[in-house]
Image (cartoon, rainbow, N blue to C red; front, top):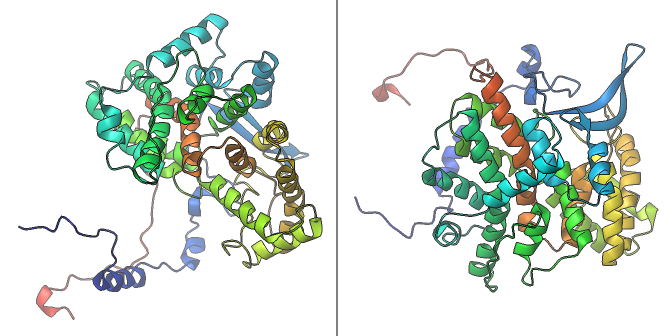
Length: 458
């Protein structure tokens, strides 16, 4: 059968439009039925708390404490393998070391490494920072995408074909695959951007190979920039971002995806590609892009960034769908779990201020600080909320990436470069402790009907 090789796959035909209306008309569920059958939509109860679906030793999130038998909001805490992230950060910062590799080791193996173990682990990651021959040319450079997450997922799935033990789910083999992917994600992401920048945007093409002696954060900046240069402060702030994004409990969307897909018995590459598809969503990994875009709009609309009354009025306009994208949201404020504060944002804030001072962007930092202070009050005035609202990690991360001159297209892949550590730890934990395929229940609310022969249908 002849086919048209020049078919426009993006075109919505009149037939598709008509059929889409049929999809909607025959698929809308009466919202009252969710309450009738006690359905926890989004796997959350009526108070927004996540439904307990599993156990983990990898990380813990604290947002409430018990006071005289009453569940009471408290400042947020995040623990990696039982250790407070704030203490982890203080530890490597005090020693003037990069912390991401140590964090990855902790998440994978459940204990902090000794100096010798950390050096050996860094050597393992350096060993795996090598792609198959011609992989960059044949896979990444061909059919470049404007969305680096798609290219990253495609690259991960393609690596399956280069692995003679791709389907071996023994712990030692999955650990080997995990270490390779953790090591390769920075290369796959940065090279995907270079391909897009060259073939789509028309910029010069350059490929810098990672250096064995550099940290993950340093290598990202080294490979990304034309002159391969960066300051120590830039690398340390990016390293901090990687540490704070590396893991966040088993219930976040992409990590839960990792558990679900792993439970089916599939391979590591398919599991990670599924997690990438989840993280790509603007409600998950893409949230910091919305924050940056919102602030760009705010900076254009407000002549005086230090006028708190004007900032507050803009925030109210956001909630009333009169500003920015008219979605009724103040991006970067609030979190599904945390109430009074997001510990990651609190840790990050001081490093953000240092970088803003070094980059001469203190006025922008002041605007961010004003919004962080005013937004909870505005939201409390305008919305009925069941818990406190505070800035989350996405509030500041996009600003940091812009100060590091990272292209917008790499914001979510940077998240993936970090979170592959948590995904890997959770995949191994599921393989060790799971055993059963994860299969939540859905209740059908459509009455049974007889089959109508084709000739009798109207």
